Length: 324
Image (cartoon, rainbow, N blue to C red):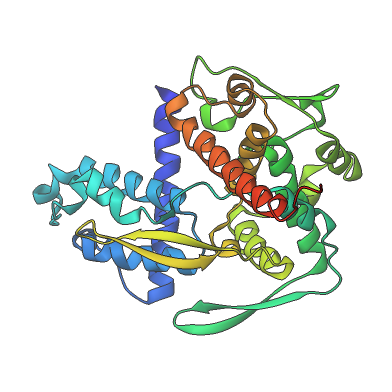
């Protein structure tokens, strides 16, 4: 219970920081009365501009709803008025639910392209801050950091929070032994035993197991990762779905690099393990999934990918005629 309360307040502090950043970005003061569905749409647009991951945005709305619900019954005594919008948790969460239809893994040729990428000069790009274009630069050193962090996720399936906490003691022979932070508060949580494949091992040895030497914040890593993948040419067009206040879904074509986040490294590991023919139970034990319901999206994705490759191969080999 104590851990739960501590975690809840930590979440609230994180949300407060994002709301303060929203105020600074928009020059718009926030009040309890401001938290409506219409405001949620504005905040969602702000989240896009700062490259806030869709899952993080959804969690932000959930924590905000929990916080406001706590004060809902005392609003008159406290001297403010709350709308009922945030109390419709499912709809409030839906507003935040902008996501690609499937996980966004990288496949073999794309992974190899990232591995071969050797930064030689800074990458310059523009972002919008308070309605104005601002130039940013990714140094060569930062490019190498993002490349290594992301490939570690692609070859281990670990989340950003777990990779940045890796220590030499987590490496036991050719196995990573770690308790995932996302499930660490669960009493039934068990250590994950993930095979340490050669490329991940090479990266760890190259940095002498000092993860701090390549660590950036999650937000900066996500922002830089998109630009690096754009530079490499990971630009297959994909569909992003968005939901409006009335729950209508709209679709928008976007290049793959724009939809990839650091979590795509985890998607990459799981999906490619399945494509390689590793059985589902084993992959779930490596990734820490306890329920097939949350894992099955990777199964269908890898199956669809194999069907596409099969059709490509069939088209190629059907060009050859039998010699008589």
